[in-house]
Length: 591
Image (cartoon, rainbow, N blue to C red; front, side, top):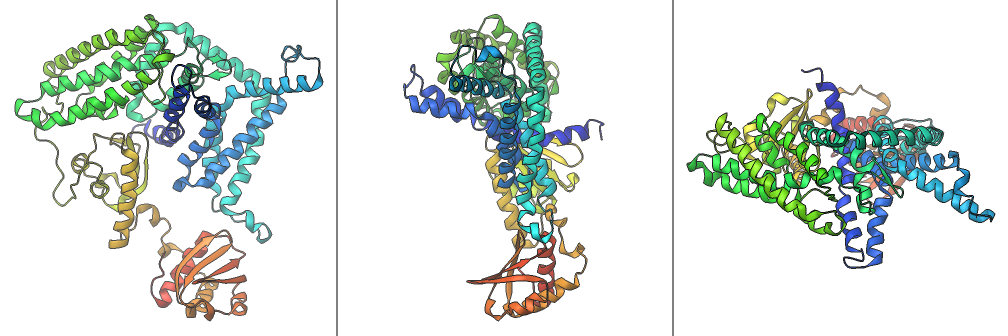
């Protein structure tokens, strides 16, 4: 395994988590643009879109924390919000207001309002970085403390309820760091912005090149966040994307270069690959390339195209990365400023046409890029005999014994990945499945491609990414449902659950005694919630509260069809042990 595998594997969750808050940008951009005077001129619609941009830090705090937390649990989002609010509001109190900010006001109340406005405007520059840091912190705290046990008198605050409390405490430390360190942060961002501007064409080329080269790792999202949400400042809005929608005429340099590539270049590359296919294979691959080209042209989603040739013809991907860097330079040299809320496709181009600078120049540049991409791809494919689709022999098909279904068939993909028992985690970002496997050797890549995967990337020792296109999130949901159904039907347990197998738990005499007392109730299900054991049973009235007290139960509540037992132990293992003990006495209890 490469020495870079472990660091890359650790960074994968961050790349995935960043996509959840970024997914709200299209609706924000849509509302903000449609409400403008040059569009529909509806003030409240514009205000609704601006509200999302104005609170991106809060959205990142909630979204990143959920994306990192096990089970994507909402308690992590609450913790992220708490950490962010404590950090930013606390930092405001520590900011030193310069005299010039209040010098124009004689009245004390007016001076206070001016000072508060200055603090809010300045701390807003930190909003997205503070939101990401808060989200990372909350996600880590959730994974670390979600099952923490506390003394009985503090039992209410144990488990998931402890996570927002811990996040608030950490938020105080962040408040001190942000408030006292703000001058250094501001100076650092200013220096970075000046360096990027000073780098000129070289900086833009490097950004475009790295943006595509990092695509294979999924870490290009981190690079994009620096450019789109941090660099530059326009009336309190920071980052190329936020400044563009705030009306900054200098913003858009880090987005404009993607339009010639995504709307013209890659669709032309699809045409070149189609024309290079063997004549008898063109009909088979024609529908694939047409679908990929239209997706890129209309929406700017390009990964399905890029992963079509990334591993089959890496040289083409390098050419593509270089041309992307050059597109950044060319558009900047022509002073073309374009922006998007989702990606560089036709929809965003038309929607934000009124905010753009010299947008019509995209057409000649785009047409030129289409010719360059077509010529470069056609020449490289034939010159080096690159095995692009239609030139690589028989298309990969599902191996015998595997389920072959339509694109996105959850059962087919689960089967190709080695079954439900081989899946430790199932996540997705914009276009990829992000998976953790118990045994990567069990996957069948041919069957996975036949089930709809455009590319397969191994990350670290157990990580796997499958490029599925824009429907990746829906496919992940279908896989989770399929995994649950397979587990119920066959008894095959997902690998993540093996870590909690009751067979590995030590015997607990106290739990065995409790199970014996509960046996007359005919318990059907056992769950833990905080310091309570929640039982679904056929005969709840058959239980004696006094008898349960001898087994450590502090209180008993009888509800229709069940019992709630208050215990001093806030321990998820208690529920698993009780379930096992009951199963041994009278058959398996359902979970």
